[in-house]
Length: 307
Figure 1 (cartoon, rainbow, N blue to C red):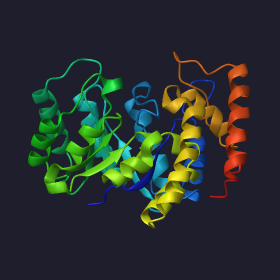
Figure 2 (cartoon, rainbow, N blue to C red):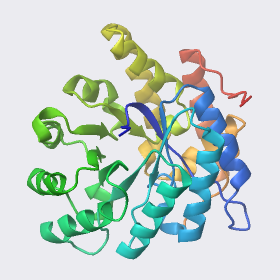
Figure 3 (cartoon, rainbow, N blue to C red):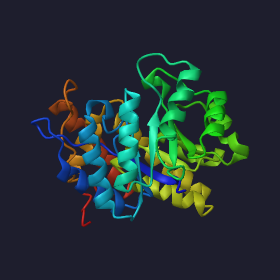
């Protein structure tokens, strides 16, 4: 089974002003991220405004990314939904569509017990072939539910195709707990962009990163430097990643990501209501900051997409 590693870009979902999904924009974004060297793509997650999308829209987005990627990078489609039936429908579709694997966020908004989460994941994972890899997705600050080490351990004992977890909360102790599951063979991807290098040093396989979905270049270089043993270079490059994280508000508002993409010549689209786009004054402030960071880092603002 394939697994995620290195830099997996969490993709925004571009919307037209009419509110419809811009599938051409998705193709353009997919091409840019592949050209810039990411190792994987992760559509329809938190960065992609997953719960603002219909099941049919999510299917079409998955198909658009898979078809554009053409096997050049790993594509794991996020399939977690508010309803278990929708999660299963999306999982089965991702498998049929040719995704390399899937992610499933915890149940969200409504509180879920450890047993409820365990049964949810076991049921979902059992709805697809046993060789279709799945990552748990734990983002407790957004979902309101948290996967403990003990719950994760019970889940993976019952589901051979649950091979890892995407953990998007900056808790080092919990990260270490996950890394020790399955005798240390459980795949852990971290979503804390500000600490990418540190998480690699802990033993994480990589990151699923929203910031790298806008400016992949420094993250790609961090991973390359780290895996080549150039630790000082990795630490220096990590400082550039942090600057981009701060400018783009660390994913607290995806409108910053979309405006950042537009500044790079990529159609990031608008937010889906009820969320509003950032205002013109904030766009100009963001442009000034991103241009300054990029100039200092030797990164072109224009993404110059050819793929």
